[in-house]
Length: 324
Image (cartoon, rainbow, N blue to C red; front, top):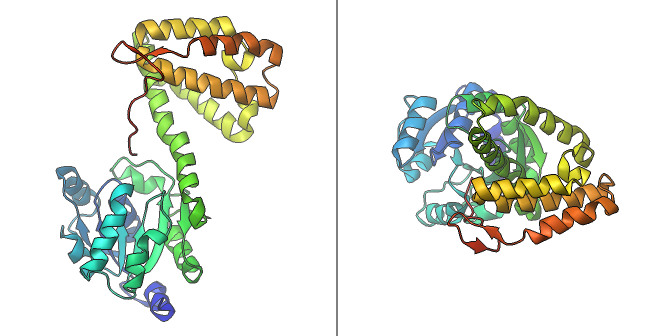
């Protein structure tokens, strides 16, 4: 790795134009990060995107930045953000390296939570400087994303000689670097997906059920409750558990399952899985007494065969996983 090139490339304070920035993959993440870097004084010069939505996002967040091919992005930029889906990243990196698009001394940054820097090895062999900077944030594809980066944690993996560079870039985007070891990236990403992605599903299901129950503004009803629950959980962990499962109210849980089967059978599998996990944690933490848990666990066990969305019985009723 060319350490002298990296120092020159990153000592932006001595350069009037600072770094030129390119984006490969104008999804929700790339344009927002490039816009944040622009606010810090860097200069977006090229972006690639295929779908109509990508073109619109790039135009909104990076006006006047030309839309070009991925190879042309790398030809124009000193710092390149690779913001494509996780499964597409290895092939993209290999393709760019094999076609000679990667230039020595070029900063190549991917934003995948799953991968560290090893996925960039083909580009490293071509002389690129690899960084993995994953913002622990959900993105909308609008200008609000740039504001949300303020104080956002980034999962950072980088070679030792590029740690200061990685830290500087994250701080310039308004974020806080959190160092993640290469081998810990999949576990780190699983933890974030478990908390954030599944939370969206749970909240959406809850709002659907409230509408069925006649609540006109389920978002207004849930907002204060969920805000308090999240705050309590972040402050106190398992000690914040409340509700019928944590109390061992088997009759109430049984009634819940009966109503869900009747009105929203597609939610039963998720309810049962979360109830079992909650019961386990409540037991381990001493909130749920073993004598109170027996009937509750019996209810959850007896409800193991659940009704799926097609009305048939199956082992879980869950659907295929989705990416971000």
